[in-house]
Figure 1 (cartoon, rainbow, N blue to C red):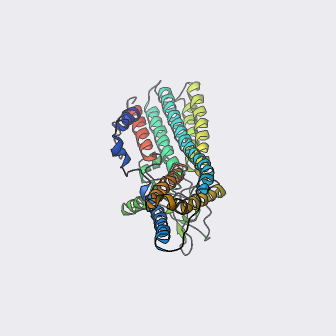
Figure 2: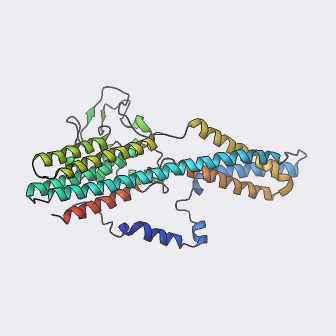
Figure 3: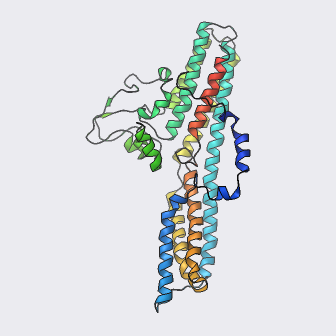
Length: 375
């Protein structure tokens, strides 16, 4: 099919790639910047190092002695350790649950393909072949629309990877892929997921490539162009669920037209669609349930207090070496918090997020090869 990519090498993925990663040299991986949060935490670390330098200068070149006993470090360390541990475990749990749920949806789509291909090829016909192609397109449209839905990408220009299957997507009569819908209100009424933070490099990449991703950066307000603009381009909300409904109707229609004569295959496909909807709801829950603001704010406050008081307590024993120690400790603690921030919403664009584009491409190629072998 036009526009598809060959992911054959990548399908040999998890075991081969993980074995290769495990053999990486310790020093190479320790100084690798790709996927690291170094650049995200570096500004905060620099500020704290400057603060530590100011404390060292005051204590060494003035008569003022800014010194506190180290008992405060011990007290704060216990509380901070508990908070950071809980924060990291909760963030990775969301990341892991997102991956498990996506894998379950992938498995269910594979099983559904097996069912409808088998059911529609018992009595081969041209109509049955066309029905297989339509079901395949609906599956591909669903998995890509789910990716866009989780990323709050509601601008049709961001859906270019679905261009070859848009002919089967159930769009309302008043909406089309490139149709301009007039709005009479300055308030966006479409319900959106998000917001999702987009790295600057990724944002520029999409903009230079002609793909406007600004609609994903500011949540609901960017789903429609508010203000003086009186025309907007939007997709209807809950697109993945609309496509699943169309897929369910298509399989039922195949059974009604006697293209699929085996009832268990139809019932099995319907059960799989129900399971897929459950999985989508789980992914939606992960994407729309942030860490409570009070917890996140309190953790950051304790982190800053701990790092700010660290030089005051270490300067007496470590002298100028205290600046290096403060920089290293700040980098470690702030890095853990930054990693947790990225993992708690695993459907975005950061290197540490789930590679949804790869997952969608691999599944599309796999399903395409499967139906092609039965035609």
